[in-house]
Image 1 (cartoon, rainbow, N blue to C red):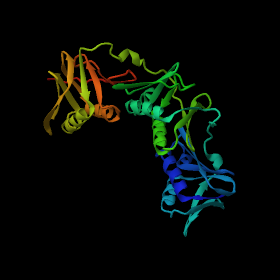
Image 2: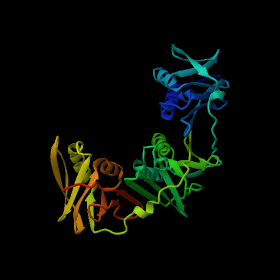
Image 3: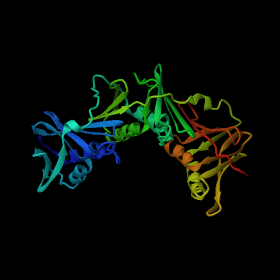
Image 4: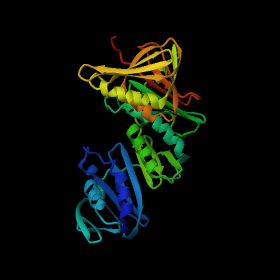
Length: 368
């Protein structure tokens, strides 16, 4: 291997791809990046066995070759280099990294030790609008579970219906559903790990010039995403996703039109006092106003009064403040509708003008 490339391009690629490298790998080799120098440039690959990411970096290749090297050491060293040309070469099982008077010798592992992964070519992938896709993902990802105790809930369910696609995520305490007028071919009924989709969102934000994302299946149980020069492959979760439709309320006794920023400030304030009381924040709806309150014996108590347009009988309901904040910080519009039926049934949050989005939070039972 012998290749020259720009430091800024290499550092950018390493910044992206080291997010995939596991902190506690199943196999020691997973702490490494696989570097493959071809005629076109340098391919850098990382994997955590669930998700594999490959980034292509252009460069001048004098000799092709492949090797594995510590992700952490290479990233940290390249970050210290001047913005000049970086020279990578292999000598006696050591990767020589040099630039502008800086030089390091990094021990290597044979490329054959790195786990193989399926590939996804641009010919096998279909294109979708990046902005629409990222809006859909950002609306649901925060509701997916992070606890591996119920693996299915750590994924996002994709349901295709003609020219529309629905994305659903739930952790058992809340649920987000987003329906968009965009067909995501071949993915109907797939359950995609939320962590991999979060990486797709990050990559899309970093590749601002790209207007489309390519998506396709790679083998029977893998899905791939191509964003610019980066390809991300992840295993689909296998199993039965919960029947989420049965927990969506069909009616309500109280409906409120609420301004998002006002409630967001109120919940942030109340959350300070809710920390020592299981993060419980109470909403009291009555006579065109909402009172947001919290109290804890050690911290004290507070209340914030907001104006709102309320129809119905009103009442009180309590939520985990973290769930409210997650919804409010990810919701894109200025106002939303809140629907409830008593203090023990789920609260429903939805846009005013369309049915593209729905968020549900289970209430917390509290004593008066």
